[in-house]
Image 1 (cartoon, rainbow, N blue to C red):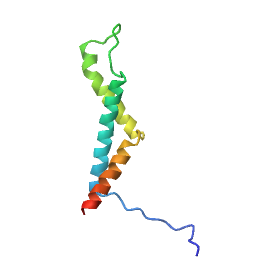
Image 2 (image 1 turned 135 degrees about the vertical axis):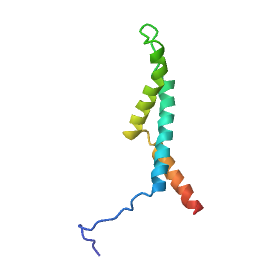
Image 3 (image 1 turned 180 degrees about the horizontal axis):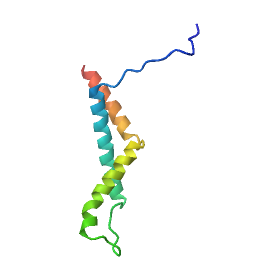
Image 4 (image 1 turned 90 degrees about the vertical axis):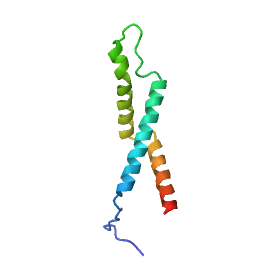
Length: 94
């Protein structure tokens, strides 16, 4: 039996709960990436050309923004794994 090529497969829209879980997973991945970027030295002020106290205070905001942008672009896949795990755990409880 052949299925017509013009059939449309409906994918259910994400629930509000799933949207919250995905947002939490992405925030966690962004936090993880920010810590990894800090550990790699991103945001450290060079000794010779330091921007003063202001640069030191706001460097963490720059690193966090860069990590969030990395997540928006696909990240390292951590958010998706966390989301899948959270959904699976939630479904096991129901």
